[in-house]
Length: 346
Image 1 (cartoon, rainbow, N blue to C red):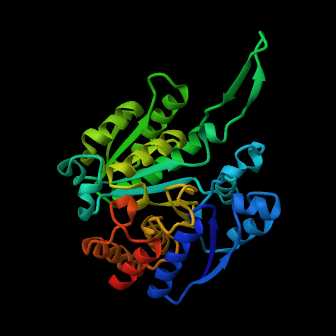
Image 2 (cartoon, rainbow, N blue to C red; image 1 turned 120 degrees about the horizontal axis):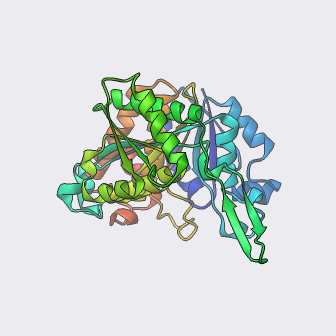
Image 3 (cartoon, helix red, strand yellow; image 1 turned 180 degrees about the vertical axis):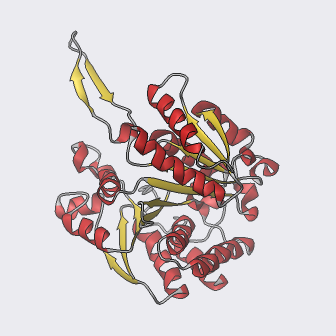
């Protein structure tokens, strides 16, 4: 099975390297092919998502993605910036559903920003719609009648886009504890009012699922006040981006949370939710566990290798139980040493 490796920028190559070592240990069924993406691709080929990289992503059974973001590229035109690569992949591959599990490993209760008794209850999946909202709406810069600069970004969703992601949310909840919370801002946004209306309509197909609604500002508060109340959260692109990063710190570190971006046929792009962290790139300080756990999701969702996924997740837990910690978790292990710890646990 062909796996596209897109290491990207900053710490991306470091965490991908450790993840490949782990995958090689649990299965011999994978073939890897690497291509540049993000700032590295722009510097090499003049575009953050070169045609050859996109072609590889389309041919592969799944994509394992590192991170994009390079300060050297911050002043480029927007369509040439590294971050456009991930947006382009989502659009070209039809990756509309982002699944971000947030679970606190019991060994990391002291690393959470929350009290241990609160953090210990965290066990949720945040499902974020990826193809709509302000990220893909009309945007630009213009002048007002008085000659002042004005930026604008259009937020929009149609009912089919909402229904599609809502069904992913309900189906995920059905496989877990049967509770779905839809997050919106329907009290002030027409886009959110449509979102809420459509989610309610789709809920008729899932009478066994307990549906609730929450405004995004309240959801942000509840994530730190009582995160244990959440089973599955479904929300739009912008709100999901923010809430999932918040959930990562509740669970101990942004270096611990994996993600999967799936199309309608379970083909996916798998990546840690952290960024390229250029301030620590090349120093061996990056935590590879989020990428390793993303690879476990890849085995389970796109490749049908659930037993191998279980082995990886168990090995991560075992390594943490034995005290393996990178600097973000309060330890001193290097990126490679953390990879060694997971391999030893395997």
